[in-house]
Length: 462
RNA sequence: GCCCCGUUCGUCUAGCGGCCUAGGACGGUUCCUUCUCAAGGAACAAAUCGCCGGUUCGAAUCCGGCACGGGGUACCA
Image (cartoon, rainbow, N blue to C red; front, top):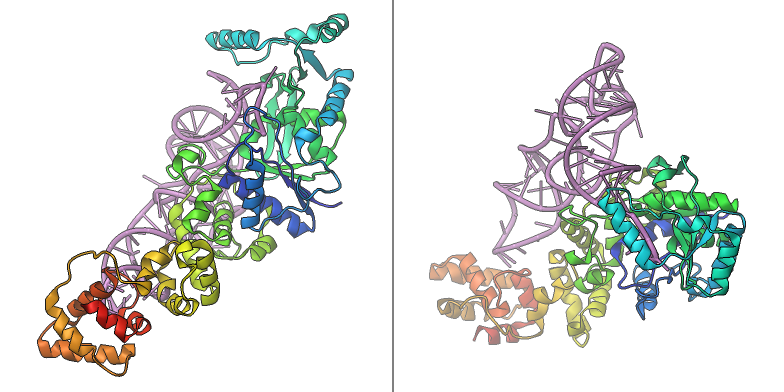
């Protein structure tokens, strides 16, 4: 049997980094087992639908190079892959459930439901549907249907039963059926709710492994029941731990800024480094390695070795991982990434850019660091961190008046001149650095001057 | 409120009854290197393994209770 995994995002906004982390697991597991990874769009919430969100999802997956084998855009043997285009299918299966006596029409108004809930809350009872419509006679239902009364379809839940399933990450999980609500499976607008859509589509699309966030554990018993009602085999479920905010308070949210995939792209993180980090917070390399590429992750990881604990997001560690990737890159490759990332360097001289790479590479954590580190190569500094001490100027002017413009020769000359003038070498170097780069920190000075050239250097002294 | 999941250095984790004086990584501190900042190298600090009981010759590891954290409790996903 072919392993089939899937990601089922809803187009309700920017892609969340947590989605990418789930995609990584889906993708890795499918690749590892020679299976398929599917993208299905769960666009059943018309109120929250965001125009263009679908394209952003594709763009994000492309950026991370986690492309699905089947998707709304790509098509595939189980098309359509957009739930909004599968409405007749859900209708048919909902009717099947009604016929079997596992679901029923509900004509309760939102107002009644809300009043009911308020009442239950006041009495400190769990807010649940009171099953009013479950006992409607066939004639009553037929009459209301004929009168086009707005209605939903609810699933029935058996009383006093243990509903359980085995989660590949958390193990055996058991619920009492009495705490499960008679969930709406078809909304009044003819769209399915998530719970119904996933079960029907996962079955129809022959999904074998469902990896999703832990927030779904509580609703899984409803899905267990649905599979049972239909007589379908339930896929293996693995509920992945939620990534928490840096302070550990709540799941990673847009409030904290870096929940959006876009944040990482714009800040100059490398997709492969982000993926490495993401896998690292819920999984450990058997040899304890922290840095490993995707192929190695795919080869080494086991779903069962994913932790069940919710990790906090640690930007500092991500910075370190990203820096490791940058340092491991060839100069040409790094340059290509920077050019692609930073509009300011697009028009600059490639040969010159390439020469600067070795000097800045090990000082970078993210691609956006390049410009602040190396902009002085491409023009005089437009501002200075502090005033230049002019008394060093004369010493430097003569010390740098040498024919052999190499950093070795410059160093010799400057040190000799410095000694003769009774000055401290480090002070002289600092003033020179300031005159040329405008900053007190940066790449190795003399090597930078060698690249900059004698003429430009001397002109910057003035 | 009710239900579910989780709980090892500040953070991410290793650990599956004796190999644990609890290991690694990020971060921190110190030192080396050094024209600055990094990077790199070395070292140090940092967890009475949430708490209380139990099982056992022996528990971070098994069991129970409690506490705390997270999630769920919608015609949202």
